[in-house]
Length: 328
View 1 (cartoon, helix red, strand yellow):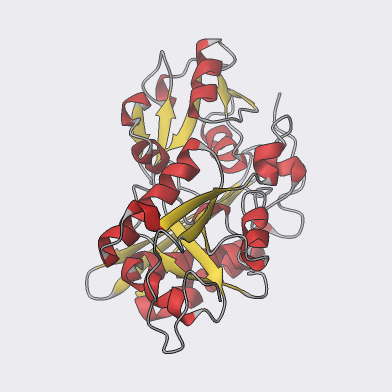
View 2 (tube, rainbow, N blue to C red; view 1 turned 60 degrees about the vertical axis):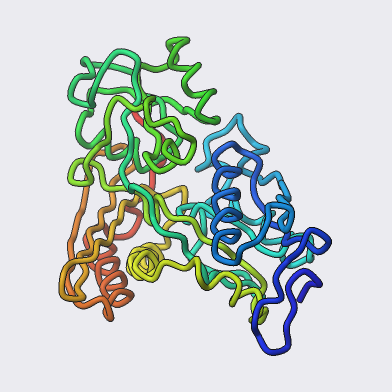
């Protein structure tokens, strides 16, 4: 327990300019926007000034290695493990994550007890010349670092060619301008948080492209057992988003999903305390797709996710995700 947040009774001892709450984050524009959103929500919830917080920027493996696809340098954890190390070493009090980057196995000593309200889950189609996937000409080149998006695209349009496309929004837009590719994808949520909605030619409906598990959601991690800090974060937690992620992350866990595996999953709340869960797995080259759907009470969220994963694992069989190379 840090000096910034301490209370034997478990009630938050609010941070001050002299003892600020240290918010650990990556240094990308989107990560910083998410850290500032977290700070602003805490300020509003507790009537605190900006000076009661300190943004601590940390560079992750995913930020350091930019010359190779994410699938080659590791799975989940590429954008989180350095932030988690900072928590464990008391160099930060909380860490702000894009939940789609967070592995289902939690490090000992750390907890994720706060999920912010979810943004738009859809993928955005980005192109200087075309308005949708359907508008792309035969053999067009599409850039993406996401194996899920590439597999989904090739499943629908095997005539297209996919190339690796990493970097921040500005870098990717410059690559489009330079003709490296004719189109790419970004998360609508990220564009909105950056105030760059106008870059999207359009949002792709989830019936056409199922998003990554937990896409659009922000999670806040802290040291386990710090009840005062948990109480400070409690007003920010969105119970509905947390329920949806419970189903989606159970689905991911059942498939041993990572950045190396093309998996889509989305849980949506229905009237009457019910939930709909859709999931899919796709061969990396887009040649085979297996999909499933569940509906049930929200109390069965985790069970639905695990059951859907078991079905797709059986359909895919051993070695379904083998052959990670993409079509030329």
